Amino acid sequence: MTRAMSGAAPARAGAMTATASVAESLAQVILGEMAPGQSLPSEGDLAARFGVSRLTVREAIKMLAGRGLLDVGRGRRAIVIEPSGVAFSDFLFTLIQNDPKGLFDLIELRMSIEVQSAMLAARRVSRAGLAALENAMQGMREATAQFNAGGEGASDALLRFHQYDVAFHEAVALSSGNRMISYMFEAMAAPLRRSFNLSRRGHEERGGSLDDLLAAHVAVLDAIRSGDPKAAGAAMRTHLEETERDIQKVLNATTRDGPSTN
Picture 1 (cartoon, rainbow, N blue to C red):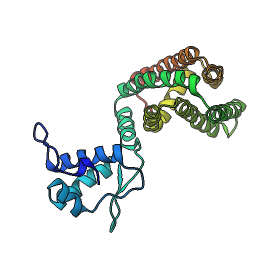
Picture 2 (tube, rainbow, N blue to C red):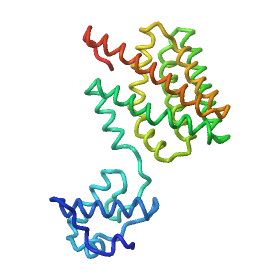
Picture 3 (cartoon, rainbow, N blue to C red):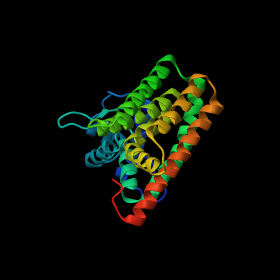
């Protein structure tokens, strides 16, 4: 198999269980040396190589499946899958659902990641990346126009606006060319949908409109398109600072009046 699998599970300081130790060793091999689609050796082979029981190997594999590294099916060996941010996403979503401070923690995280991704995108954006950004922007424009027209389609227009809003930020992350940033954004996507809805409500309560939100994204896109990292980072930072104020407006009203923030 690999050098990391050639011996017993490494000893660790403290009381790490054999299962956790095997899981850690397997994770290092999976992430560093295996490709998606590859199958792990049999439980018996792994047990012999690590010097543990088949049950310990089986439990370690379950742990890694829970972390989104392996696909485990009945009657076949575990298969390596592309890592995803599902577990982290679930954690973030639970956090912002149950703790208002989590929303601001998320904004601080976004400030660190998205300002940098905008700056990198301005340096590295490809033709395909620019097309993705412009497509998301066009979707936001059309949704804004339909919302402003009013009528029965207004609520659907808001939903589409948020979907394209997430797509825009995702395209910025992908255009950064940094795989870790893209991974982190994938994990943030579901929580962002909730925070975007809250920030839009707060923006309206502060006297703003979808046109203002659209303009903030246009500023980011224009800076990326012109290859100006400083302007792109500044535009993203300004947008996120406004988002923080918008969410604070909603939460202040929630504290005062008591309605749900859903």
